[in-house]
Length: 245
Image (cartoon, rainbow, N blue to C red):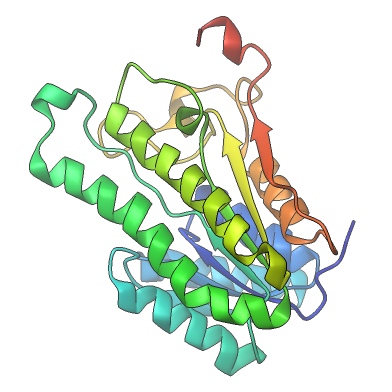
C-alpha cells in the first residue's frame, strides 16, 4: 500500500457512502482530511471515527458544494490546519427526476449545480495548491458518464461533463506535475437514489454490485501515484454490459 503520510486531503460528499469510505481509505494511508458535506451531525460522526480509527487529524467543513464559498472554506481549512493541500476528491453528486419531458426546473438545477458547479468550484480552489504540492485531483465519474443512458439523461450528462472537464484540466496542469484522475463506478451500494425512491444500498443485495469501499480504494490508488497518473479507472459489476448495450 502506497502511503500518504502527512498528506492533506479535501473530500466532498464525505458524510456517507463513497465519500465516507474515501475518508477512511486516505486516512488509513496516513492522510489528514478535511471532510465536506451538508449534514453536519453525520459529518462530525465520520470525522470522529476517522480520528479514532486511524490516528490522523480530521476537520469538519460543513456546507453545500453548490455554494462556491464551501469549497473555498474547505481548501482554506486544509492549508491552515495542515500547511497545504495534496489531494482533492470531487465526489459530491446527486440524481433527481428521470424523464426529460417531466423534469422540473428544481430537479434540473440541483443536479447541475451539485454535480457540475460543485466540481468546478473545488477544482478551481484546489489547483493552485495542488500545483505547489504536485498533488492529485480525483473526480468521481460514473458508468453513466461513458455510455448513453435511456433513463435520467440529465444526470448522465453531468457525469459526461465531469469526465470531460477532468481530462481537459489534466491537459492544462499535467506539465505542472498535477495528476488528474477519474474513477467511474457503475451501481454502488450507498444512499444514492434515496431522493426519488429506494436507495441503492437497499435496492441491491451485498455482493451484487460495487461497495463504496471498492470505489474508495480506487480513489486512494489514484491519489497516491508518485510521478504518474491513473487517468481513468472503471469499476463495473461483472455483468454490467449484458444489460447495458
